[in-house]
Image 1 (tube, rainbow, N blue to C red):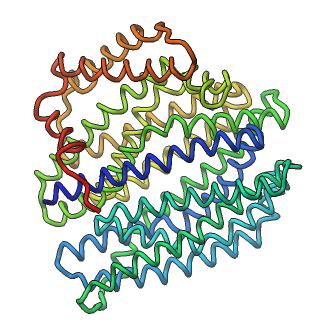
Image 2: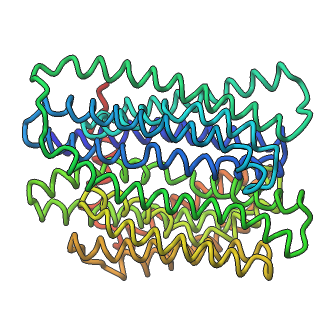
Amino acid sequence: MKKQTFLKNAALLTITTFITRSLSVWFRVIISQKIGSEGVGLLSLIFSVYAFFATFATTGITLTVTRMVTDALALKQNGNAKFIVKRCLIIGILISSITGIVLFMNSSFIGNAYLKDERTILSLKILSVSLPFMATSACLRGYFFAKRQALKTASEQLLEQIIEMAVFLVLINLTGTVVSLGFGCCLLIIGTTAAEVLSFFYSMMLYYLDIRKTREKSEKISSFYKKATLIGIPVTLSACLRSGLSSIENVLIPSGLKKYGADSEKALSQYGQIIGMVMPVLGFPNVFLYCFSQLMIPEMSEAKISRHSKGIQYMAGRIFRFSLFFSLPVSGIFIFFGMQLGNLIYNSPDAGFYIQTLAPIIPFLYLDQVVDGMLKGLNEQMHYLMCNILDSIIRVSLAFLLLPLTGTKGVIIIIFISGILNSGLSISRLLKVAEVKVNWTNWFIKPIIGIVSIGFLTKYISFGSLMINTVLKITIFSVLYIIYMIICKSINKEELHWLKNLFVEHRISL
């Protein structure tokens, strides 16, 4: 029954997240058409600052609620879940309100002195309003994850994406031609803020409808603040430090590209193309693994509190194996068909080149996200903290040293070094604490041989139009890869049965 619940949640979260990510990529195409790659670069700078403040206001609260509510439910203390959520809501609203005021009051300084672009100031002021609403939604999201109610979380994120798009498209049509990049960014920012506000009301309604079913009285937890601090602060510090260093890195990228020889417009355009256009495309197929990374937190937490070491080993090994089975061929698809995808999605050979060049890092990026989710559930926040600190320091140092000398090549080098280092440290920790045994031949060597062989076999086949050609090639590649994996016994009958369970045997009941 528990396995069935997990699989249902995974399927629900995957479907809705797939729709959300699809809309997001389509929306980025529209944004790039309306304000160009330079505008996308300007937006990326704005959101790099906003991400730091949002991280400080929300990151620790989600994990804290998920872990503490999961533990309470595992101990049959349902009434304590109310107490936990109430306290976390109060803390989240207080912290996020202060954070929003700080951002609003310092927007001019940040825009002029830090980002060195006054066009970002108004957008930062507008975004500051959304932080308390975002913090509340983040808190309730943690509750829904703990209750294994994936549909509520996924539907909230889908609603948020639709509202953001709708508001921007309505405003852009009402105003006509975008007179400046700063004005175009503000239109999008208004949509983002409106989406946060409305998703807050939606989340509160879902929470109220769910919590009123709980008959047990809410009881005060004497160790609440101590436990919340131990869970939330390491994650918050880690995320804030990484977000802050990431923001510095994002400012250094266009600055370094200018020192390399690009003018301001070209530097911002190159930055927007790699960070704002290409990376979202590379991350798009990660929908399924993202869902598992979120759902694994309460599963691992419950297994740990129950001291079920065999269950931890099984879940960690299975998810790690499936992540490789999925991410390696995705990387191969982008390597062999990246140029076509760049032309198809953005009508840009440059975007295609960057997609193809960055494709080999995909398995590391995908695995890192899944492994981090499992480590959080296993109470490995300190290791997570140290890995992210080290990774962020290295990224900023490389951005400062490399970009003025190498230009966009330096950006690519940084992404590779960071992805391999951070993923490698996290994976080694998971394999140790979960005692997972790696089968190098079946998990790595055979799949890579198959991907390279099938890639060269399908790369030069032509089917007509760009869209038909690309879709058919990717489909043929995927089918041949699965057949190859079965023939060479890199995936066995038991694993095929597990995959069948994921997609066929467990019907979804809402």
